[in-house]
Length: 366
Image (cartoon, rainbow, N blue to C red; front, side):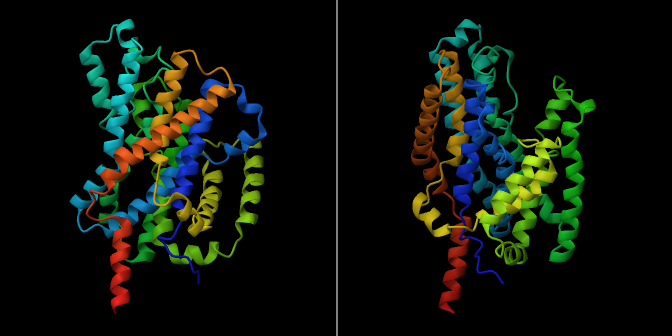
């Protein structure tokens, strides 16, 4: 048996790492496109942030749903975690663009800009009007497409739990079957004959839950089988798992398998076993360092507005500009957490941690 406790984990630190990975790869990719020759950064690419986010989301959201007293409370908690920071970010991002005079230059009307705000701050984050094509990388905030996918995960979770048998064994059978089904949908993304990225239907497909759900389901499976998996994985040192994974991934890439957002399942599953092992490594130190602060979401949603602003203003031609962009992203994320996210989270009536606290207090009283 493992001595791991589900809620005593380092997942906040891992989310921070995943956000950092996305930010570094995006920032360098747009500001210093020749960075790929750096070996350390190539290794960083072995740990794609978005798939890690989707796995952690399935792992935690499924537990949050199981502990929610009702669907309304579940929906409210998800809204409070996602939307306040998103709305503020999109609003300030549009203001940043407006200050440059760009909207006037391209003839975008108030209605056009208002529609852009509504799309990005609601559930149509993947939509981008043509008048934004000359600003930065050509998209107001391209990283927000994952918000649309996450929202679909949130909506699907209650329906999944309606069909998953309560018996764990039979529930696992169904989840594994769904896992393999949606792996097929994921692999469609990399088939050349289906690469019709300019077609509307293809764009809708790529931002739907279908190509990404297997990553979320993997998180659900790990959560529902925590006791069994922790007993197995806890016996393997991370000092062994980490180099083995890196060597394995190096050869898989050489054989043509992908990393990044379209990571091959052949790479994804070893990565997730490593992430699961790291999630319960140094938990006390991790929690003491972060002290309950989680700026990963702020880092993720704020980095592209800053990168695009700097690109439009003709910054971004040196590593110094990259460092400045990373520092500004960090400051924006801290401000988002302190001023928006943490106050919103405090409005939750039921949280994952509070549920466990009540459960533990009842056990103590007994």
